[in-house]
Image (cartoon, rainbow, N blue to C red; front, top):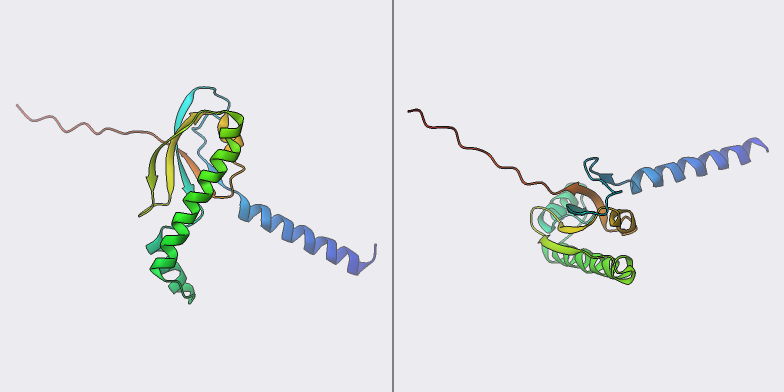
Length: 144
């Protein structure tokens, strides 16, 4: 292998590594993906909420209207629904979307077996998956 070929291979490996880094998504370590139990998760989509997308585009000097950004959010939800049909419905994996987020956050909360998350990871819409936990604060006790 000559020096030019070596440089080409090294450059290709670097680009492939960058692609892997870009495509990596976050999965909350509290999620048990080996459990058959139904769990509640929150899925954060790669597409930003409309107002955030407009602000980010403006900061980069890229034109983006609020209307177009809203359409992008709607399309991200439609693509995710198609992914659910393709990945879960066809395999008869039970799930339920419990809430849809579009304003301050773009994504969904849903319930499904923990083992189904591995299948769901094939969706290109997903940026992160978090455990959906409720926290309750106890009010301070009143002095007697």
